[in-house]
Length: 222
Length: 245
Image 1 (tube, each protein chain N blue to C red):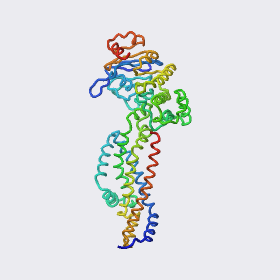
Image 2: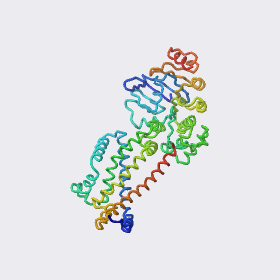
Image 3: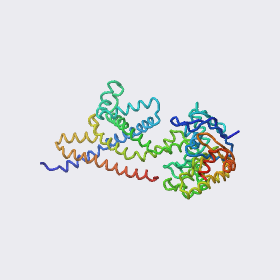
Image 4: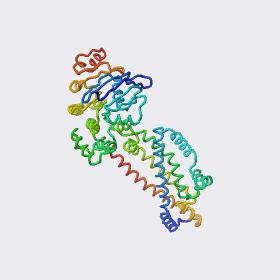
């Protein structure tokens, strides 16, 4: 058994902190994309908007029914063969697109459940003061659904952030790829992956604090 | 011309008839109290007037806006609804808004009134309903009676042609009922047009211009409070009054 090489570990840690913006950038952009799509799909399902409703069901079924890694490969390697214009897409963009589309499918169900969890009388009250259904959604229902959805959405976000590690398979220079490179050239696998695990863990712990704060703020009214 | 006219209104839930051809006219400034046993269709009638329930057949006309149930479009329904305001049995305050926010919400989002002006109007109304000091309280921090007064304030702010009250005191603790009824009497004195579904007979006697008795989805009898309460003609009205008085 060999001793842990602390100076190697510190060195790698500093390098990873330098690359962290790539991981975080992909996470936040993909999450934003997923949220917008998920709210859209949830509303389509709740209002049973003709035409879109069937598409949404198919979408959710596909993205929940196939592995994320397969979807990423499909976007980055597969689709450009059919649509040459897509060859211009970078691995970074393909990851954001893939993660966003994938997690939107899960989050749509979560948000749909949260919207249905808001008391029916809230929609009736909004209609009674003369709002149309979309305004009622935006002003009254979604803010109340947010409170129900936040813990679940945070779970999705944590899952999404960790899934950015798959981007290394497309060649994105994020923290997983960086660690692999360093580990392979130094043969210090234990230190490398320990440090990497630690970085993910700390980032997610910070997110969780943020979640607690958000939940407290959303609880104020209740 | 009547402010509200219902013609041949029908509604069924899962094949069960709830409204069986309601014809009714309400005049501007009139206060109409609707009585009837539970399940008689009185709440459903009220909820059809602003399309919280969709009638199966019949027409609803409020001043110049007419909606035929069999050919009603979204825009017509919205226009009809905006001529009414509604007070709910369970208050149904917006849980994500303060007392003040519950009143300003529709003023800013529906009527496009600037935030400052809406707040000023809402504060005046909160003073009217005696809750100015609680303007920044969340609904969850208010008692049932206070919540219902905000609910009435929210309806008042709309300045709608017709105010609809669906059993506004039924969910309240007995000692809170009077504070809500007192406020409604105040509105009645301002000659707002009101339709009130309630079981509060003394209130009906004091405030109503006309009482309507509904049973089995039909208007059985209507008249002044004296006519209906002291000298009911129909056996169903007599039965009902014997039970509640």
